Length: 87
Image (cartoon, rainbow, N blue to C red; front, side, top):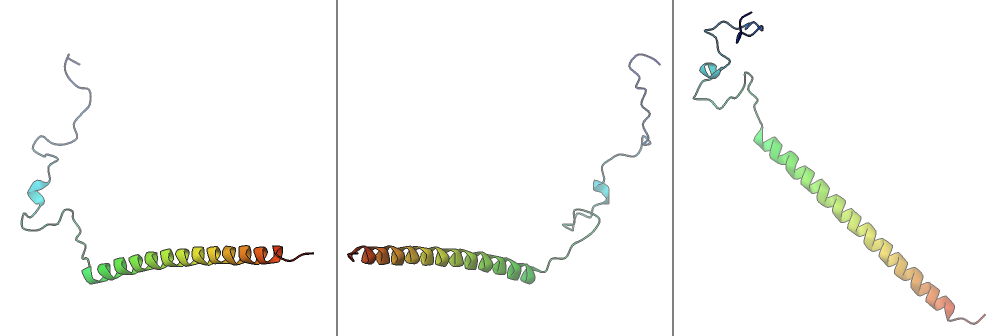
């Protein structure tokens, strides 16, 4: 082996390159070999359902918290009323 020569053989012929830009049709927005069709209406519906579910979860959590606070307030009032009695 001479100085400056690589001991790794190149498997690609000299006339082939790694660029596959020649294979892409410039009139399409396809990036790869396969094309994926997206149903926009269905996608919008799924997003709206997810946002509605999240909103309902937040509302339910807020409702539970308000119920807990109301129960604490009732319990505190009952204890105060109980303390007014002489035993």
